Length: 166
Length: 389
Image (cartoon, each protein chain N blue to C red):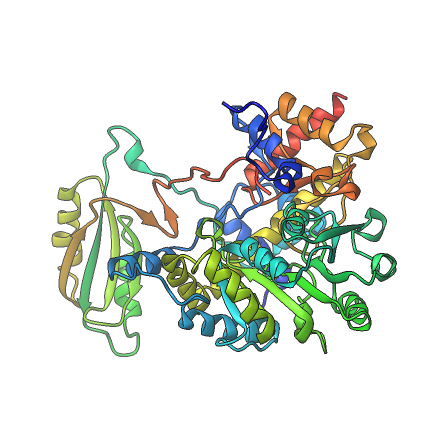
């Protein structure tokens, strides 16, 4: 789908701040609120805007269990469907948050979320490794999140400028 | 103690008026929770790859002086930059000097061209340093007023009216601080025609040239016949968000450049070496950063201009820089009163327009180089302030 200049602006603004008011978007682009609303509806309808989600720093929440791991998976592609079939078998698991087909030394990159390391380990050994096409897996646990999807988790937002300057 | 000697300070400097901005700085600096729209610099921190390049230069031990005119490598990048972005060709060997911010470029330009009593036409409202720099160079600043009814664009007839046999140059800043007004090609051409007719120099402060939002930018030096009579001042502060690095440059014909370099070498030796290495990286790989920042400023400009108009502070959409310059005449206050009361009552710092010159009276300068949240809160407080009058 080819976007107009204004639609592209809307998408860029919303990607950074999904809770921004429609009136504010309209002002920033210099178009009417109605036009902005219509464009957003169209973008939602066409699934250009897939969902509005929040980025939560779960480590800030006390006693919240949760670990993330990235798993490199080598697989045997199947005739006719290539990697799509095995990718689908993997992404259907609820624990799996992302699946990417990669170039390089392995084929699929998977990000999985579990309550504990044990749970992730169980997923790998009991659900992932045993799949027919899976040749090998390498699991890397994420120890700390510094930056995610362009967002720095503990940014230094202090305005270091002097208050008034020429 | 000798009580008859009242001061060691020279007469000229004693008579120099302190910048009107200082007063507001002192007032605002002592207050908590101030939202400042008074800042004349980007809210972006310099891009990491630029900072990283500067750090790397320090690690590698590049801590000595550079050539007086600046690193040749940097001057070559500047020449390339001026050619690709602004369609003007300068020789890195004889026509470009790297300076300590655009301010020092303006300073050496004035000192280079002025004999005692020579006149420079300064178009107000403008950056607070132009007139003092003319004075300090022994010249006479002749001010003319760009008027609100002309969207703060100076009319050629206004310039022509003040040209005398002593006029040496016109000081021109587009896009302008504080009005944000940008002159298009035709408007520059009209001023260029005058300069050619009366054999004047133009000192073109093009520090905001990267930050334009509607029309394509034209450099004064790109106008036919003008490069030979233009001293083009620019730098990295605004477009590349590098204010604190204090790095600018000046491009001028060889004869003037050579003369300016004499002052520069005696007064400053050279600009900061570390900053120069950062600037090389900025010019080589910083284009996407500039584009991103311009996009962000444009959105915020649109937002603030419409919001100010909605609360009764009328302003035109400025074509460049990052300032809105709304009229506050409807409130019946002077710009000093407005700015002071707004700061004390609502904690919003703006700069009163009269500090930039006579025709700035009745206006305030609002910098929109602040986050959208800050701008929203500032507008809210300003509305509250106006309603309470």
